[in-house]
Length: 273
Image (cartoon, helix red, strand yellow):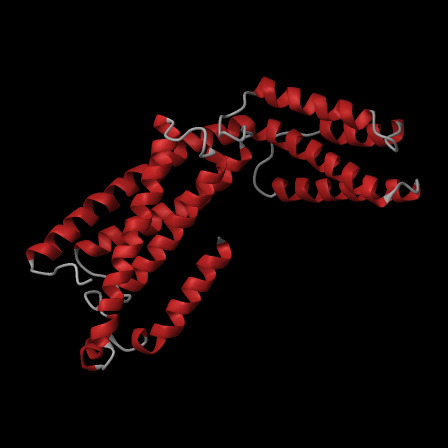
């Protein structure tokens, strides 16, 4: 989906670059103005398509998350990715719909949309830090610790995981503590160092490569779970604060969008397709 977003953005930039680089006051005299302007065939299509993508992405996600719409068919984990995809690509289309001309009430909608998109990206990062089931239900601290315990038990029973290796991993995990600022980077480096040591010791034991890969993955999962347990309360708190930025600006964007469409219709503009 990222590739689609990049390709679409690249294509729109390529086909309209010569027009978009023209100063605003001179665009009216350009031959391509009737095509690329917001009310032109191309610009109009982008505005309608982008708006529909946002509305559908928001509606289907809310319907599934809050009202269990199509619960057996739509997994919240994957629907979130689709929601993010539509609500990033949609605003990009709307950006090109405006032909990079911002003014009046439309500018309020645009900058609200920018805040919503940026906060959405941040929200996704926070969201994935909180362990969840595939259905999207947030796991409790007890459930996460139980998962870690099961994983630790599985590691103990694996060939190649002797007392020295288990002690190395256990010492790292038990020493974990909640970090802020630059210490996150330091912790990341420590994670990489621990994984590197495990990989090195497994190679020294001449264990099969496929088994080495599996064991390293299990160690990575163990470290990841340990880090998530340490950060769980912080991320849960941040996720609550995150709604303060995301939801109000989304509502502002929606209200201004309705006003924009209403004013457009009042001035006689109609669906041209």
